[in-house]
Image 1 (cartoon, rainbow, N blue to C red):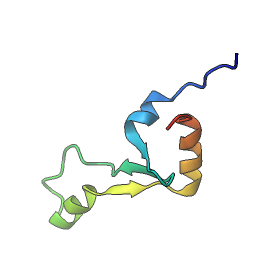
Image 2 (cartoon, one colour; image 1 turned 30 degrees about the horizontal axis):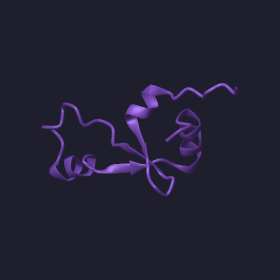
Image 3 (cartoon, rainbow, N blue to C red; image 1 turned 135 degrees about the horizontal axis):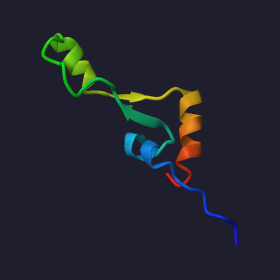
Image 4 (cartoon, rainbow, N blue to C red; image 1 turned 90 degrees about the vertical axis):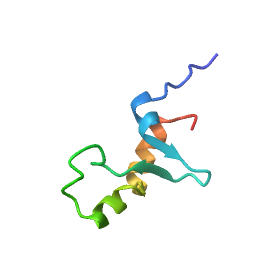
Length: 66
């Protein structure tokens, strides 16, 4: 019986794999110190970000069943 691959749980909580296989994460720096930011930057922080192809390849190794 082959061994199961383990999912990296820290990656699983931060990154989502879309139906087409792209990796999406939240933009960093949303938690606090946002009052000093302009409205434009605050709005941009609310959007999700696509990972680069290199990073997505590494993430897919960490999330074998995603």
